[in-house]
Length: 433
Image: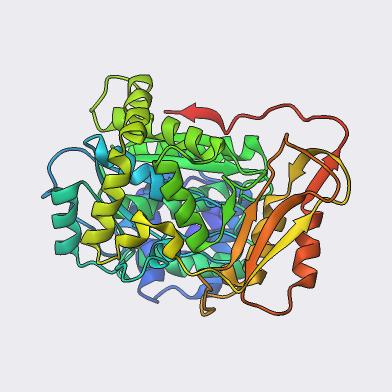
């Protein structure tokens, strides 16, 4: 088999066989196929696309390129959740403990933030002592003991994706649904979960900018899961404004704690209730997702979800006193008010603008090597649909940096104020299974 023949076949619109796809993935992962040939095939896929069987074969070949996590020693249905990334997305820190408190087993590998999107691992590490580098034995024991563990991805998981992801970034082949879907799903399938819920976001702060594109990606990933015998479902959620009020690591942990106490923002609370209901159905704990939603609400009201977060933090070496008393989290030197230039309704909050501003304040990374200031970020005082008076506070910018004037202007520019009140938008736009 020759790589050039595979490139020409896809270039001309042909369907690649599982053997051809496996040959390419194995050869590229081992360094036997050069970057220039891999780039040519990625570009051919971008232009010609792939059908369901090809995408499933590509995903499976990538999954098998490295280590597989065997969760068979964990009793019951293992559930996992994946978000395509967004601004203020602390969902895992709320949703994971809630579903675990209802009897599901959540075994999750998460990532770090880059650019304007925050990573769950970074948020977790804002809790002093918190470990995210559990061994496989520790990971499995913790899920068996308390029902939940959230850790970092090991270096040996999905090496094919690591190489292809880096290549796509520099060859203009990022915007391909088959390549995006196989990248996400191959990593999720490596983690060994029996059931996966995908939170596919759209809007200014998301990778997919439109609902139609988010739906196409979600449907593709659900079909991959079906081909590979995993119960995979997806929800389509709004990321045209930040999720919740807090953007930044320790700030988001505090909001997650508040949400588990029943004191969280409306959109975040609604999202975790709807997503949690589906995950409990996937775990066969309830007969349908509506019954699951009722159990998630009860876990918030009773404090069971908060207790489960404490159990996870303690099990992973974190200081539980920060969960009991969130005022212990270190605050930034400055908490700067961003005020409304005029009166009116908040018609839009540019998620991307807020996310980039939070990064510039110190809450994110421009490159993988950048250090994060856990105390920095932005806390919104207003959401879309709220009325604001001229001079009233729109947001608080938390930073330890002295050079912040330009960032404050960017935050103010992210708020669109008008005389007409906008229509109320749901947080969840669709459910695909």
